[in-house]
Length: 221
Image (cartoon, rainbow, N blue to C red; front, side):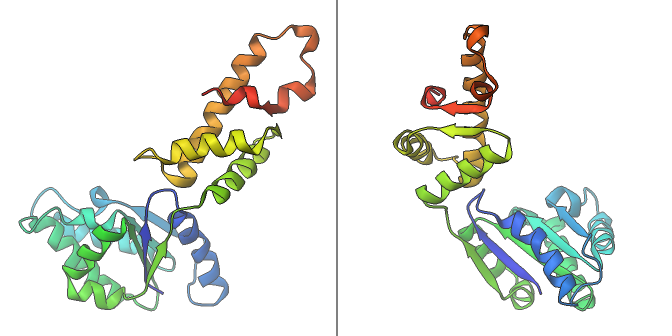
């Protein structure tokens, strides 16, 4: 049940991990579908000798029966001199083995960094041997995500595909775009532009349809 999710931000790693808690439960592999513990380095690595092992075991205790999801797992060990981080990983490996029938652990992060992290600890690699790569979304997929997100927020779209594809395509070139997360940010900005445009309209022309309809004019980001 233990998995490694690799890929860039916004590709659905956390979302799929949450869905797995339900899937594992209905398959009879886990006892508690409501237990999904998400943590990062600060939740597992202590600040003084002896604290780290206790923190790891406490997090494991809370996750028993469900899923422990560690995002950017490679940050647990900053470098070869990070004794606290190394202790955290060693304790984690031990706890995974001790609770293998009552716990699923999912590690997530960038592909290259996760590979290096797993190679640094043979025990970790042997207990998390299944790696699933989450590829970046294509432009068409991101456009679908935009439409779905806007519909979920209660908006109608009256826009040209070329305007949407040009906007998302331009944003995709940014280093920190973030895939679906980046599309969500575009949605926020389009809605803000839409609200600004409505504020300039004559009240007599401000219909219910106009209030909920996004047009090409709202893409002047």
